[in-house]
Image (cartoon, rainbow, N blue to C red; front, side, top):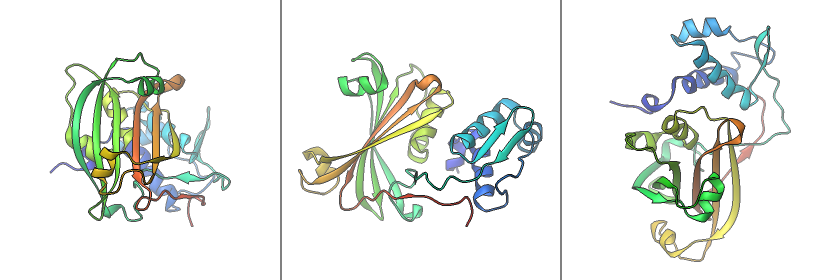
Length: 241
């Protein structure tokens, strides 16, 4: 049976393993991580793959790397808020589910093209999903990725992978960042029907723009969320405790 891990790049798995140890307090601020060579031998992966995983941890502010010295667990910055989109507004990730509604090849409209820095009319793959918590529809999500002729699309990958992971797997490019924009909107009729709500009621629009090196956009996610059922929670905390 295939699991979510089957669709997650190895460097993501390495980063998640080390992140769990940091959050659990097994690795404390100031502690040195094993060397790239040691991590490569431990996980059976190349040094380049190890570096990609460490880069993700550095982007989250969990580690600091110094040339000639190695990587160390960073001291937490409690002035920064962390907004976790992986759980899609659910306090209990076990209650979260998704339903893939459609996969289409489309021509990029002006707004999407502008966000992805491509020409209007460029071919994109659009994934449309319905997000549910405890069986109730709470959000409609459209994911836009570049069209690549002949590249297979795996439905399980789209269902199980969070958006940055899906972008990395689809493009084969290391993602360097994720910009999130949140705004207030009103539900349109089509979205209201899917969310079993009345059109015109308040909703949240959550855009994720995932980009690679040199701030090159790689993918765009636009979620329209039910204003009364969907909640975003930002928190600040030490790595452990």
